[in-house]
Length: 234
Image 1 (cartoon, rainbow, N blue to C red):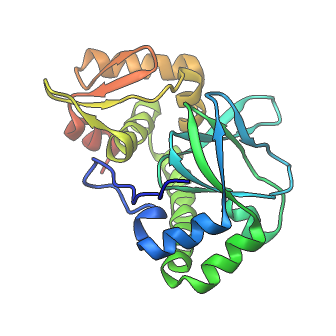
Image 2 (image 1 turned 90 degrees about the vertical axis):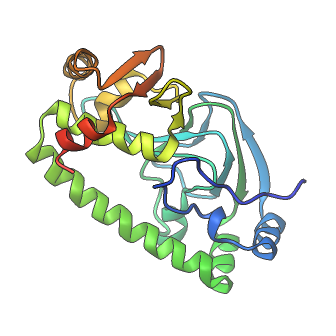
């Protein structure tokens, strides 16, 4: 298997990923413990309620984490991309999966058993510190989303999410703007912002009319990030 390179994002505001914080020898040790896996677009890496028998480190491609509501609606919880960890929570607390992990595009990942993952982070301080910080950030993010849902309308919440996508996965366009080239549906966005598909479609239409974004089939180009930040209250 070829070496796993450190993963860097083009977005200057992106926080370091799990692979970013590892040195070359640490990546070699991770590779030694792991098994390379490939998943086609739409393939499931894991399902809600399953025993967490693997932790995944995404080396290419993107995944979404979703959960089904009691009413049967899919709600998108998060997106992960190259360099990110997924499935580590089950390895840490020993509980079943709390979300389904689905490949948004062709995904390559390193799969590592919970025992090997815990053994690895216990001997690699940079990895352990990253995991602790990540879990703390996700708790803060969950609290923030609860406040956000109460404080913002659909346009405001969608502005927050599109801003996050630009920072994390955005690609600068030659003619200006930042392109989010991920196969996200309006249903995905609606579940992420906690709104109906119809409300989300109206919010996107309003943002297009204002010149903040343009949309194509499963892609978004942000033209006015400052307007999004103002609307999001950032």
